[in-house]
Length: 235
Ligand code: NAP
Image 1 (cartoon, rainbow, N blue to C red):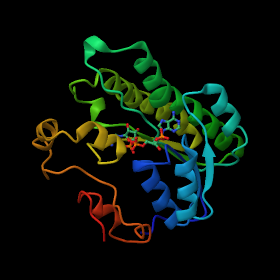
Image 2 (tube, rainbow, N blue to C red):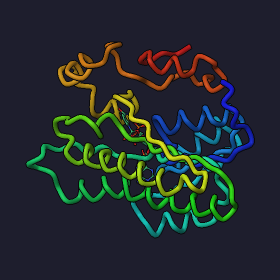
Image 3 (tube, rainbow, N blue to C red):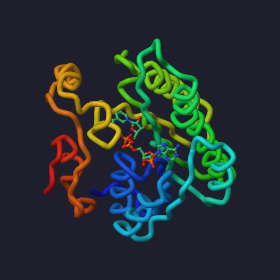
């Protein structure tokens, strides 16, 4: 797929699995130089084997100081995808401080921190750029046991608007994408129960969840993004 991004440098968080990993593969196939940030070194090792030239960066984005240290010398970045996220599901009456803190640290605070670092670099270089925040349909819809997750994504949507407002004058575009269920490791952990899934599937016109293509040769495949809509498709 021709994205017109060849030669640019992108940073993708949560690059080890799921949506972030697929994004890195697609950007790499499009000739983008990618910095892949994630928490599990083994995921990054296999990603680099699949996509030679990708720059791995292993850090826990919930740790402010470690993130500051790890990204402090990352160099110029043109495109940022704030994709890393956690979904810790609990009934409202059982929400814990730990789940709240971890979720907001990763899903919201890290977006502010990483975006600040990237945006400051763009502004210093006088370069235009783009930031995409991976939010969720859960920012707009109440879902059972999703008190904390829905709250982080609702806050992320508003953060995106304020970032767009303040960074626009520097020619930095900021947008959010709000996917429905995607059968990544996160999606499988939370939506594998057929009874629970049915309630959601009944509200999706296509009647199926999205899924990253499982085909290992898929990055150059022009069908790649269409495959996403066919669960477990492998070409
Ligand atoms: P996933 O399968 O769980 O993958 C998430 C990736 O982010 C993993 O590589 C994970 O690394 C990394 N990550 C998580 N916490 C991190 C941290 N503290 N520091 C660094 N890396 C971290 O999730 P996904 O389904 O691809 O979701 C990606 C984004 O899409 C999330 O923001 C999610 O909220 C959003 N989203 C997902 C769905 C869905 O149904 N899947 C729907 C709408 C929106 P480890 O595995 O090593 O922790």
